[in-house]
View 1 (cartoon, rainbow, N blue to C red):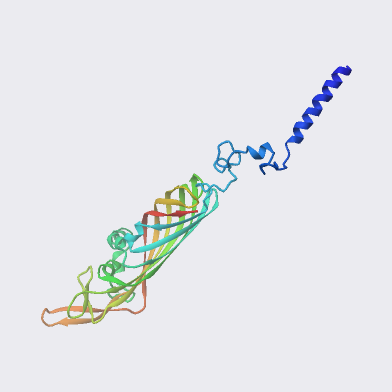
View 2 (view 1 turned 60 degrees about the vertical axis):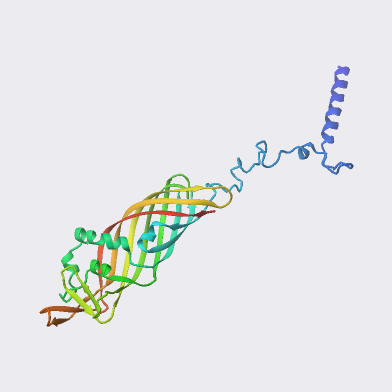
Length: 297
């Protein structure tokens, strides 16, 4: 038994000597630490390093899951004569908020093309051709066909995006929001004797100077889309594609019938148009689609 105690005591002393040899005192000759852990710790980019950014979910690795902010520019809106920028902020893994700001620089070509269809299907066209006094008025179709941009207008947007696949702001999302756009137009024509407009009923409106028109579009929409994020580094490239349906309220300046003018040469009457400060409103369904590019960080 004494022999076993002696062997155990010798082994204990050997273990203690080995432990104390792992100290942090620098080597006097090299200045390097004697601690083997310090001398042989893998590089931070090594796969053997447990603190590697690539595998540590708590690191600052700027992959798509750590991006919280996105700024995009909608390319399709250029076809609507709108230059629009959006800022999106992730609030939760499934939720983000988005705001938009921009300008309208010409009349809405898409609206000019499709608004006659919307009016025919969803609005009373007869009511749109007459003002409150029962006199003829220019319809929105007539106004858009016979107008040009006068000055820049404003564009505003706000929405919430719910990500049903992926993690905000990346993946498949549903979006509920509203947009507001103002177009500042001017009725013009190349008639040498003044300005004239022929409405859908064939009535000729003339005046000696163009009339300023304001068209306001308030849209409530529900969109579906996909936002993907690619790239390396802290700043990523973002692309968004979306489509949806909505309800649009269009308010525009009323252009009403003025005094009748008899033409002795033709034996016909024409009418001057007047602007009395009143406005007209129509509500029609709308379809939305777009593609945006931008950056995320």
